[in-house]
Image (cartoon, rainbow, N blue to C red; front, side):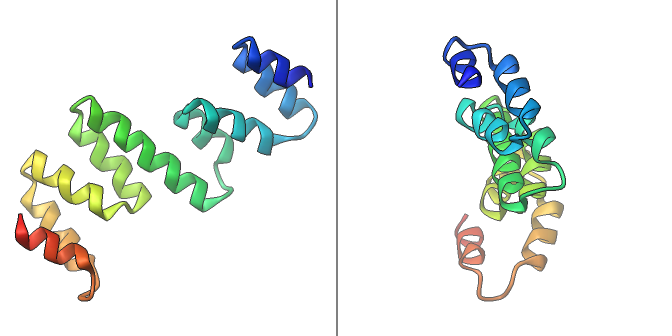
Length: 119
Protein backbone atom coordinates (compact mmCIF):
# COMPACT_ATOMS: atom_id res chain seq x y z
CA UNK A 1 0.00 0.00 0.00
CA UNK A 2 2.82 2.38 0.80
CA UNK A 3 4.24 1.85 -2.68
CA UNK A 4 0.91 2.68 -4.31
CA UNK A 5 0.62 5.84 -2.21
CA UNK A 6 4.16 6.84 -3.23
CA UNK A 7 3.28 6.22 -6.88
CA UNK A 8 0.09 8.27 -6.52
CA UNK A 9 2.16 11.20 -5.26
CA UNK A 10 4.55 10.70 -8.18
CA UNK A 11 7.41 9.42 -6.05
CA UNK A 12 8.07 6.63 -8.50
CA UNK A 13 11.61 5.76 -7.44
CA UNK A 14 10.44 5.38 -3.85
CA UNK A 15 7.51 3.22 -4.95
CA UNK A 16 9.79 1.01 -7.02
CA UNK A 17 12.19 0.65 -4.10
CA UNK A 18 9.34 -0.36 -1.79
CA UNK A 19 8.18 -3.01 -4.26
CA UNK A 20 11.69 -4.40 -4.57
CA UNK A 21 12.12 -4.40 -0.77
CA UNK A 22 9.14 -6.74 -0.44
CA UNK A 23 10.49 -8.89 -3.28
CA UNK A 24 7.80 -7.83 -5.77
CA UNK A 25 9.91 -7.04 -8.79
CA UNK A 26 6.87 -7.79 -10.95
CA UNK A 27 4.98 -4.88 -9.40
CA UNK A 28 8.00 -2.60 -9.81
CA UNK A 29 8.11 -3.52 -13.50
CA UNK A 30 4.35 -3.00 -13.83
CA UNK A 31 4.72 0.47 -12.29
CA UNK A 32 7.38 1.40 -14.86
CA UNK A 33 5.28 -0.02 -17.71
CA UNK A 34 2.31 2.10 -16.60
CA UNK A 35 4.59 5.14 -16.56
CA UNK A 36 6.03 4.35 -19.98
CA UNK A 37 9.55 4.30 -18.50
CA UNK A 38 10.78 1.68 -20.94
CA UNK A 39 14.46 2.28 -20.25
CA UNK A 40 13.90 1.30 -16.61
CA UNK A 41 11.68 -1.64 -17.63
CA UNK A 42 14.64 -3.07 -19.55
CA UNK A 43 16.90 -2.69 -16.52
CA UNK A 44 14.39 -4.37 -14.22
CA UNK A 45 13.35 -7.15 -16.61
CA UNK A 46 16.84 -7.97 -17.89
CA UNK A 47 17.17 -11.73 -18.22
CA UNK A 48 13.46 -12.19 -17.63
CA UNK A 49 10.31 -12.07 -19.70
CA UNK A 50 11.36 -11.96 -23.36
CA UNK A 51 7.97 -10.66 -24.54
CA UNK A 52 8.17 -7.75 -22.12
CA UNK A 53 11.70 -6.96 -23.25
CA UNK A 54 10.62 -6.97 -26.90
CA UNK A 55 7.74 -4.62 -26.07
CA UNK A 56 10.14 -2.32 -24.21
CA UNK A 57 12.71 -2.31 -27.02
CA UNK A 58 10.02 -1.56 -29.57
CA UNK A 59 8.63 1.26 -27.43
CA UNK A 60 12.10 2.76 -27.08
CA UNK A 61 12.43 2.51 -30.85
CA UNK A 62 9.16 4.45 -31.12
CA UNK A 63 10.53 7.03 -28.68
CA UNK A 64 13.56 7.64 -30.88
CA UNK A 65 11.54 7.54 -34.12
CA UNK A 66 9.17 10.20 -32.76
CA UNK A 67 12.20 12.43 -32.24
CA UNK A 68 13.67 11.74 -35.68
CA UNK A 69 16.63 9.75 -34.33
CA UNK A 70 16.27 7.00 -36.88
CA UNK A 71 19.64 5.35 -36.25
CA UNK A 72 18.82 4.81 -32.58
CA UNK A 73 15.30 3.70 -33.48
CA UNK A 74 16.68 1.08 -35.87
CA UNK A 75 18.90 -0.40 -33.15
CA UNK A 76 15.98 -0.91 -30.76
CA UNK A 77 13.59 -2.13 -33.45
CA UNK A 78 16.21 -4.71 -34.43
CA UNK A 79 16.49 -5.88 -30.81
CA UNK A 80 12.70 -6.12 -30.64
CA UNK A 81 12.60 -7.94 -33.99
CA UNK A 82 9.98 -5.39 -35.05
CA UNK A 83 10.46 -5.93 -38.76
CA UNK A 84 7.61 -3.68 -39.83
CA UNK A 85 9.06 -0.68 -38.00
CA UNK A 86 12.55 -1.58 -39.23
CA UNK A 87 11.40 -1.35 -42.85
CA UNK A 88 10.09 2.18 -42.33
CA UNK A 89 13.20 3.18 -40.40
CA UNK A 90 15.56 1.88 -43.07
CA UNK A 91 13.59 3.81 -45.70
CA UNK A 92 13.91 7.02 -43.69
CA UNK A 93 17.63 6.37 -43.30
CA UNK A 94 17.93 5.36 -46.96
CA UNK A 95 19.86 2.35 -45.66
CA UNK A 96 19.10 0.00 -48.51
CA UNK A 97 21.87 -2.46 -47.61
CA UNK A 98 20.26 -3.10 -44.22
CA UNK A 99 16.86 -3.30 -45.88
CA UNK A 100 18.19 -5.93 -48.27
CA UNK A 101 19.59 -7.97 -45.36
CA UNK A 102 16.20 -7.72 -43.66
CA UNK A 103 14.43 -8.89 -46.81
CA UNK A 104 16.75 -11.89 -47.02
CA UNK A 105 16.02 -12.81 -43.39
CA UNK A 106 12.23 -12.75 -43.82
CA UNK A 107 10.35 -15.94 -44.72
CA UNK A 108 9.02 -16.04 -48.28
CA UNK A 109 5.44 -16.06 -47.01
CA UNK A 110 5.86 -12.83 -45.04
CA UNK A 111 3.25 -10.19 -45.99
CA UNK A 112 5.90 -7.60 -45.17
CA UNK A 113 7.70 -8.48 -48.42
CA UNK A 114 4.70 -7.24 -50.39
CA UNK A 115 4.71 -3.98 -48.42
CA UNK A 116 8.40 -3.50 -49.13
CA UNK A 117 7.84 -4.15 -52.82
CA UNK A 118 5.07 -1.55 -52.95
CA UNK A 119 7.25 1.19 -51.49
